[in-house]
Length: 525
Ligand SMILES: Cc1cc2nc3c(=O)[nH]c(=O)nc-3n(C[C@H](O)[C@H](O)[C@H](O)COP(=O)(O)OP(=O)(O)OC[C@H]3O[C@@H](n4cnc5c(N)ncnc54)[C@H](O)[C@@H]3O)c2cc1C
Image 1 (cartoon, rainbow, N blue to C red):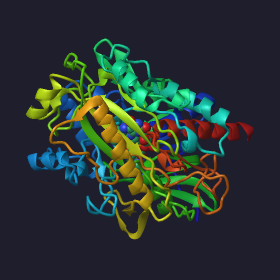
Image 2 (image 1 turned 180 degrees about the vertical axis):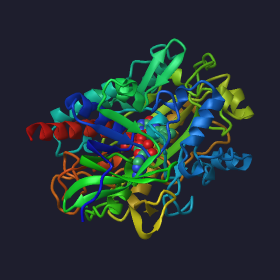
Image 3 (image 1 turned 45 degrees about the vertical axis):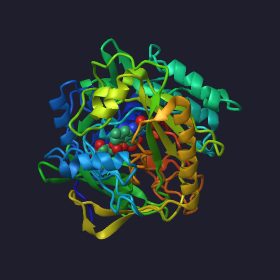
């Protein structure tokens, strides 16, 4: 049966987050004559499209943009954290407030204190989660690295990704806490570590300005493509890809659905790139009948444990008057004082199977008792991100019959921590207690907080990359899906290793490598 297509492009990119944007940027640079269409299920919520929402100074405008990103919940703000929830969170009890995070919508399910993945979220807006993220960009090390990608090639791609995302660890030289913190923590942890694994400022996708900070969103990656630099590039919002149209192992096009028009269209495409986050990308492959056995399996994230601690012997510094979403939002999130920087204790293999981010809490964002302390000395959020075991049975499943609100296969997430994961959590808590004691003490009345599973927003493994097609992976080292010749995937779901570090830098680097591969193949034809 011949399919009738309404238009034709060389490459369609599904998803406009950091990885989709990295494909668009690299492909238009390498193949200036190729027609590239990037679509996103969500609307444009910022000017320029894909801008980081924390850069929007007006609180009401920022909240409006967040609400518009909330997929099925895009019509109203979530209820703010209740006093009961705040006290429960402070006492280290299951934290239901993590099930409604501004700018995002829940895709997970299950109880907050048991098996399941209840706090898994996604965003539907141009820019994806990359318009909401924190911007920590550590490089992978040790067992985090993908063993079958040449080290020098990956290092070069990471450097390019750092440039695209404007990553630097030298943005906050005037931080009054970073120096004393690094000296204190270095004394505790640096011995025996390689230089790149010592306590240091976290590399952040942030630019310091005279008024504060500007966070990098996908707009920074797209750059002049957003101002019409290429007549061959188009960004189309409010457009869901419901299916890749396959003929054998070859994609011939895609079926799209307008979220506002409710029209279905079909576009012919030479190459299809699926950069629709770690859960919605495998969903699209499943809907298209592309189902390598490992699809959706090996779901893993970074379990976390966080405590607020007082840093004695240092003054709290000037209250931040500025920027970076620094104004206290209605949802009572503890706001980080970005200009104090982020101090990082890197992951170091089995001997330190987590990484730690220390940030200063803005006193005004804390409840009155805690605020009184934070006005006298810095209150630090000490956050551990743990590795978790790679388990085949941890997975996202898709329904053959039920659909989500955009007509895509309904998802169910299944996740269970292993015994080793629990041991690691205990080790993290013990190490956290040691850090709190060295800093001063943990904030009175606060227990270590372990958010519900899925809270890290770093979902990996669902489309894992492999060296060979042995049923344990979904794509090859060029990000091409096994059994297809022109379907590529992108995002954290590709990462096949056990990691503690925030994954976006790695995923953007993999997208750059894959886009170069596509360009080379097309040039060779
Ligand atoms: C609050 C927060 C803090 C974070 N902090 C960090 C951090 O410090 N460091 C770090 O490394 N990472 C962090 N992350 C994670 C980071 O944002 C993601 O790793 C990154 O955005 C992933 O990029 P992506 O392009 O793969 O996917 P996304 O940015 O999620 O973009 C995917 C896009 O695909 C679109 N889409 C989905 N399905 C379809 C479909 N069927 N058709 C069309 N479009 C579709 C979505 O609308 C979305 O715009 C954080 C995330 C959040 C929300």
